[in-house]
Image (tube, rainbow, N blue to C red; front, side, top):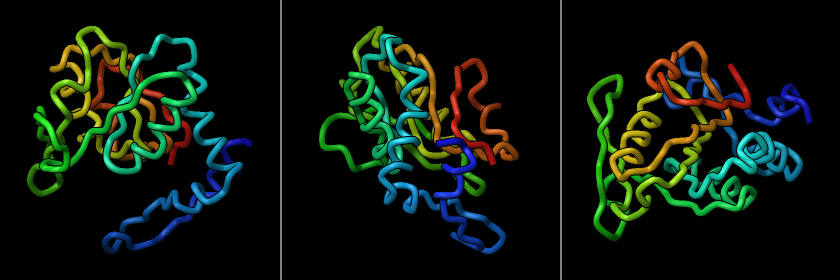
Length: 173
C-alpha cells in the first residue's frame, strides 16, 4: 500500500476539536485490516533487528500502534500516561501547551538502565509530548534509539523540539 492509499484511509474532520482545526481521524484507518497492517508495518519495519528492547507508547493512540510495533519487532511495551493513571510509583515530566502546561508519567521501573527504547505515537505536532517522553526515558537510564510517528504535521515544527533525536514519520501533512 503506498502512502496516498494510506492517507485515503484517514478521515479528515474539519473544526475539531475547535474551529479552524483540521483533525486527522485515524479510527477509519484502524477499522481497515489492510490499512492498519500497512500502518504498523511502516512504523515497525525500519526498527527490525535494531536491538530495540522496549517500545514506549504515548497515551492514548500511541498504545495502539506502540503495542503492535513492539509485538512485530519482538520488544516489550510500556505506556506513558496522563498523571494519576498508573498504579505504582512514577516519574513525571511536564511540557508546554498553547495555554499552560500538562504532564506525563511513567512507572519508575518501566525502563532499565541502558535499555534501547523506541518511542511511538500516532502524531507528531508541536513535539511537546514526545519531548517529555524522551526526558522520562532518559531520566530512567534508557537510550532513545528513535521516535516513530504515523503522522507528522510538518508546519507545526515538532521535530525542532526533538533536535538530536532520530525521528521516523510515515505520513506528512
